[in-house]
Image (cartoon, rainbow, N blue to C red; front, side, top):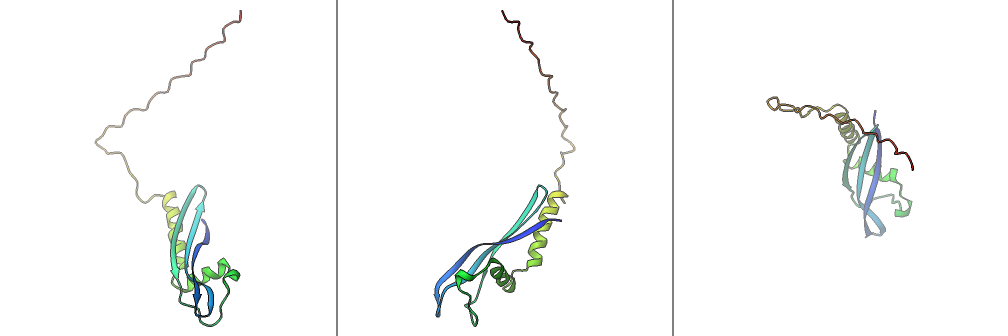
Length: 124
C-alpha cells in the first residue's frame, strides 16, 4: 500500500479584502505517494471565496486548515489519492507493455570477455 502525503506548495494572497489583511484566495496543493522505489503525484490549485464570518489571520493558518478548505471547495481527496495510488500500481504491474516486434529477429546476447589478469613482473 502506498504512503500518501498532502502538502500546500504556495498560497496566493490578496493584501486587503474588505477589512481583512492578507486573505488567501488560492492554494496550490500536491499529493505525493510512494511505495518501495515507485512514486506518483497529483497537483492542482483551489480558489476560495472571500471570507465571511470567522477569519484566521495569515500567520495563524496551518497546512491542515488550508487543505481542509481545498477539500471543502472541490478537491476530491479520495479521487486524488486513488489517482496517485493507480499511478504507482501501474508502475508495479504495467497495464500496457512494449514487446519486441515478432518479425524482427532478436540479436544474440553479447558475450563478455573474461578479464585478462596480468601477473606482476618480477622486480629487478
